[in-house]
Length: 133
Image (cartoon, rainbow, N blue to C red):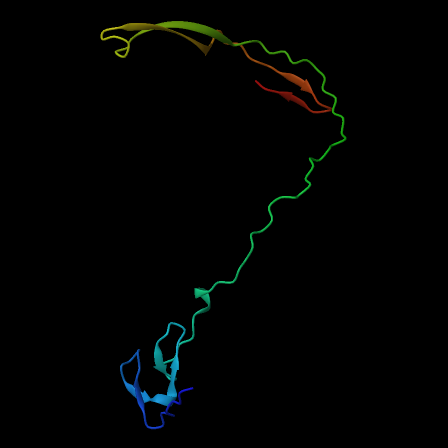
């Protein structure tokens, strides 16, 4: 095995500052640079973050909650239909099948009827009464 000199009188150039320092006072940083002990900077902890597993989001054997309450729904749900169905026929130009071709499209829409009537819905759910006008 080879023997190395002790370096008592040797000098080494710092990779950070470029100054000459005694060989025995030089240390190696985490990135491989040789620097004097006064210039040494340890590796920052954020360069090697700790492992944090993901938080659990759901249960393994989940089951929906069963509610044992009985709700009586009664009363009259009387509402008049205030919407009418309107059918429209539209002719539009369609250049894809043949140039200058027209196609007819039938569209049904719901539109409120012209009569002004109040809509009243009475429901009884236990004691409260809801009236929508």
